[in-house]
Image (cartoon, rainbow, N blue to C red):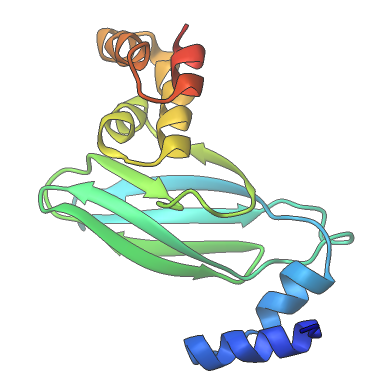
Length: 173
């Protein structure tokens, strides 16, 4: 049976219990995709991480997107996932951690339809390679974590040669 997209939206809203006009306006009726720059600042004294997220797409052509995103923080307690909602061109989020930060994975599931430039230390990319179960997170780790060229990043590349995913093996070569 044929349906209009408004009927689809209403069906989705009934299932999730949320107003999804913003989602359909942004992803169905408009064009473009977000381009994000993500930077992190770790404050050891306060045990907080501040994520600065900038939407860099051309605002005259594409709107500022509303983006619910999961951010995983790996610390002394293991992994904690935080849900943030980006709604402005530039926005900062402060997340708690315990002990030492092992890694911060922005868009933990790696399902966001966006171009993302993420600045973080190579050690976090290496940790991400070994501890993420997402292909895109591990591929990103392999390309970004090798820039230091130290023993840990070289070992990651060697381990990448035996990865279960062919693309990761190809990049490792």
